[in-house]
Length: 207
Image 1 (cartoon, rainbow, N blue to C red):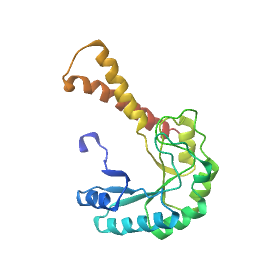
Image 2: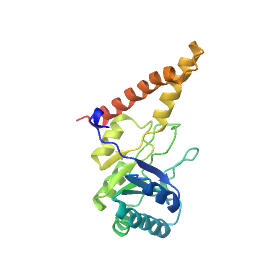
Image 3: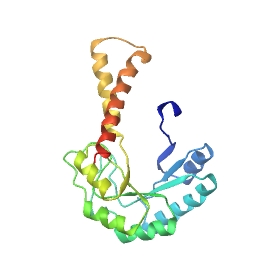
C-alpha cells in the first residue's frame, strides 16, 4: 500500500467461531473480531477473553461486540443497547482492544433515519478507554457520524453503501452495452466506490 501512502490492515469482521479466528490469525490477519454478542453476557465475556489470549502471541488486535446491533432483516431494540457499566467490566475482564457498541445503529438499509443514543455513547466512553466501534454506519446522517466521533467512536463500519454504490453503477453500465470484459466494467464501479469513501473520509474529518 506504500504507493498510496496509506496503511492497510487485514481484519476479520464478525468472526462467528474460535476456529475461524484461529485460521485468520494463522493466515496473518492484523485484527480479528469475535462476535458472541448473541450469547449471554458471561459467555460473550469468556469467549472474547479466550480470543484475546489467542491473538496475543500474534500481536493482533481483537474486537468484540456487546449489546444487540441488528443484523440484516432485524430491528434494533432499546433493551439490547450496550450498558455502560457492563462495557466497563467487559473490557477490563477481556482485554479487548475494540468494542462494537449497540446504540441504535443496524446493519443493512434503514427504513427510516436512525436515532443514535449519543448520551449512552458518552456514558460508555466514560467507562472505558477501549476503541469504540460503530457498526451499521451506512445511511447515518453526516452530522450524526461526526457527533458519534466526538462522543468516542474511533472506527465506523461502512459496507451497505459501498456494495450498493458498486452494484448500482454496474447496473447502469450494463443498461447501455453488452460488454462482458470485467476489466472494462469494473473500473468505473470501483471509481464510484472510491468517490464515496473519499466523501465519507471528508465527513468524519470535518472540523
